[in-house]
Amino acid sequence: MQLLYQTHSPYARKVLVFAHEAGLTERIEVIHHETSPTLRNEAVYAQNPLGKVPVLLRPGLQPIFDSDVICEYLDTLHAGRPLIPAQGEARWHALRVQAVAKGMADSGIAVRWETTRRPEALRYPPLRDGHIGKLQASYDWLERELDMNVDSPMHVGHIAVATALSWLEFRELPDFKDNHPRLAAWYAEFITRQAMLATPLSGDTQD
Image 1 (tube, rainbow, N blue to C red):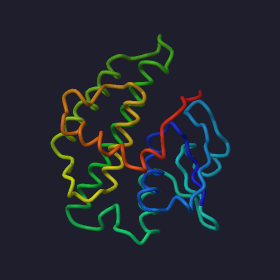
Image 2 (cartoon, rainbow, N blue to C red):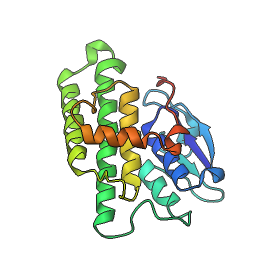
Image 3 (spheres, helix red, strand yellow):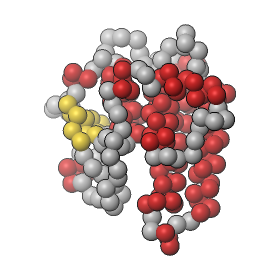
């Protein structure tokens, strides 16, 4: 399989960390592609009509795109404990955490548009502030709701949160550490995992 990837995408990194945790990296060739809403990458568009990474290319089969969907697929390919619980409240908790993490990345990208990426005359501060509020509310929610006990089985929600927080830190977006001690301690421990160390963020968006 081939994974169309970007070294500064929190969504692509989530998939690659998931693949490491599932023991599948030897089956995946990672191919870097630069994409942005203003930079059309024809090779990516040929596989995903949204023109976004990550995209998983499978020999003889249709490509799979969207990080959540790719992780669902990868979870069917290994013999270990599922990283996406199959049923019950454990499943809904993991997916709910994943949704919050994805929303944090979405809001972080929106904040970047309204602070650094959009021409200054076109920026809209109320929109920036609204997305900062979403980030702060998400940090508060994770401080309360994320299962952080060492005995809690690691799941896709943990991977999604860690990769989203790492990207927010990488882009110097609103800090989550000062006022969220449980979350900060959990994050400091999680980023020492080999899957995180093997997938460092690097580079900048090319428009």
